Length: 156
Image (cartoon, rainbow, N blue to C red; front, top):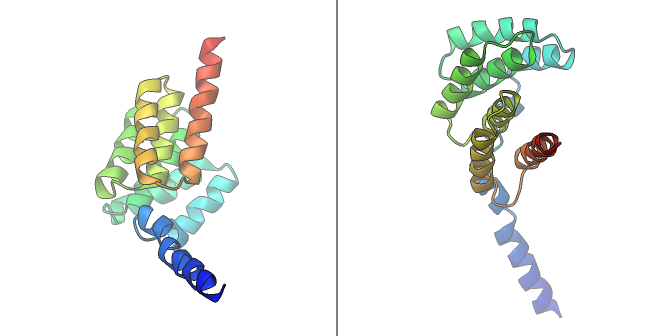
């Protein structure tokens, strides 16, 4: 019986790190205490996407190699009034150029494609998330629900 518990404990220790490794070793840097990201997220929570975009436009100018800034900037532009789609796609693509495994950028880019009616491109992002999220992740689940809802609406 003791041997059984030791083997079970060893299996748990060996398997536990796998989701972290599948996600690229650590969560996106948006979980760190970055004042720019905190301000942008607060503006987004208040649905003040114009303010969020202004904060992030400045941040992207000062730090053009930050994938999180590009991703959130594109998000704020997309959610704001009258999105300029070429700019939205440019910044999502830049986030993914910097960090090809950026799960939120894949999810949000997929949502942007759905907003512009491009189901095929949205499904490409879903497939990318499927590869990145070996054991599943919120980004994959959320985009999958959005794709399914879009397909349901198109069937009507």
